[in-house]
Image (cartoon, rainbow, N blue to C red):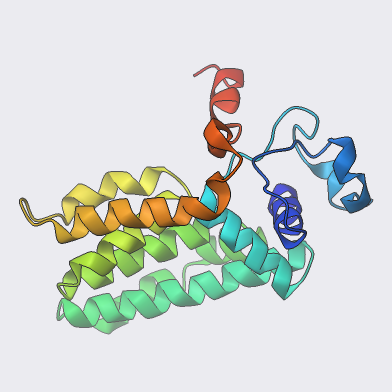
Length: 206
């Protein structure tokens, strides 16, 4: 969560988080005793997180410029998940009460809200995509899947499950949304837009 707050603070200052490691001397004025000392790889890695995650980090720090702001943002994402699940159940003519299985489960509450994990935003986008697809809103589903994939990359693997072959609305909307979400960050960053992804994968032995 410390990197989340740091990236959000950079953006609030108008700084592209893909361009500088936290230890860069030009960022000294943003360091504090709470967030900066706890950033993993502060002297080695720029951010690893994709653009929609970055937008979420900025929003979290606008709620509160601290870990608490991120936790509140994840609580809001959890509320979106439950709302979209209810809509999905309605669209599929399934009992809405099934949503209680998720809503009353302690693990999402603990991992998302208490720990402030960005996965809550990715899951919210995935469930919104499934809800949109169930209502035949394929364009909206494509945008939501693009957003999910630019929080954490793995949700993109779910998209083929709802794509109807030869119908272009979903893949076109997905592609356009990817470009749109990247556009605020790509200027001046070039290939650095991928952040420290490949550095991280190499360090982890992948």
